[in-house]
Length: 453
Image (tube, rainbow, N blue to C red; front, side, top):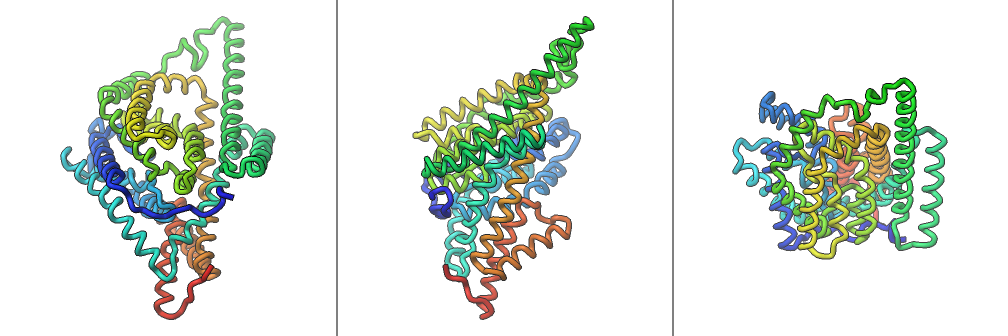
């Protein structure tokens, strides 16, 4: 079954066009970060308003960005890129957040960002070749992470439905997804079995949320009409949003830089179209296997969990997301031409920036849909934590058997016991890399014989 085999290729030998695209995009994203117009890290964006308004220093916001990003870059971004052969946003964009904020001058920010892009496209291939030449090839072993990530990720809508709407509807969503996965594997064996299940799961979640909001509004309107107070319904048309002035100023600030955002959208969409970049953990392995349609589906469904977060933090802080609402990912994967990707990416970003204020107002009137976004992000995090941990232990077993599991699992547990020096999502892949290094050292000392498959 094509959806369960290991990634087809882990080559990181980029063409000249791909190298130039990565370097230019890293330069641009570092420049936008320096201007406090956009950052990739969702955790940093809420702090940007203080920086924009001069209430915090550049060094302070840089420290925040580095602290929230370093673990993901070296513990998740780099191992995922090396094991799948596909770049990811944690490796490409988190460092440019830090470098752009760190740069004291405008002209220095794109130089630092471009330099990081050069490190990626010229350095990763050498590291990849070196790792594959080792007696214990831990990068090939890390491809065992693909199957648990792809299939457990399928369950995030079920978790989100259960948390928001209870066990009964959660069980219903789970049963529907299971039937669809089995049916897809039987009838369409060449299709990633989780894609149709995720689609239906997300639709069920949105349907339940919209239905709840509609019932709530009708009940409030009926009660208000009965009391003659329709104009005072909370969240209704007669109530003015106290955050409207702040949101309006932030939206206007972003619109003033619309040309820059259109260039950014063109660049991200182009990088996605070149098929050397995946927007998420599951997507990276799908891109590596050439399953671009399935990758587009996965990232499209994932976007529902992040659109409300990105919209509200952008309106509150005046800093947009480096990849926008992430909708340029699936658009880029599916387009046949790089030039078409450039045009479509620019148009998608233009539409997103221009629609920010409207999206903020809509979300204000759909609290259940907004809550669904929170549940989706939490469910994605939980499913991926389990999938990455399980896949990492599979990788450790593939390269070192019980000893590999002991080392990698022990490092993960040690990280937990010491207060998570490395963020949990990145701890398991980082442990596998360290485990691979230790096993190679033991081999050179004559204390370990590599497992042959």
